Amino acid sequence: MSKKKKQEAELTLKNSINGDLFEQLKQKKAELEKGEAVKKEEERLKKIEEKKQREKNKSFEELLNESSMDWKNFKD
Image 1 (cartoon, rainbow, N blue to C red):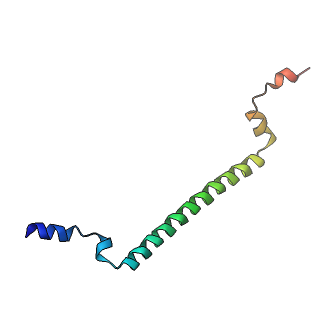
Image 2 (tube, rainbow, N blue to C red):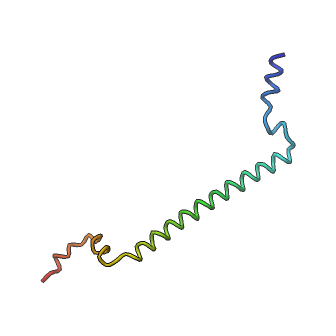
């Protein structure tokens, strides 16, 4: 009897619910995963745009300090 009970306990969700319902759940999972991927991509693009805006709004002094050129070489 214990073997039979173990087999019954091992039934999966797929075996215990209607096939149509299982397919609906699989589709919903796929939609959620796709939505999450879209959200991550939008967040990545937003970060890139914010970085561009920060670069665009830098002052001349900040740009000069970040420059790797040695301005002493251009003095007369």
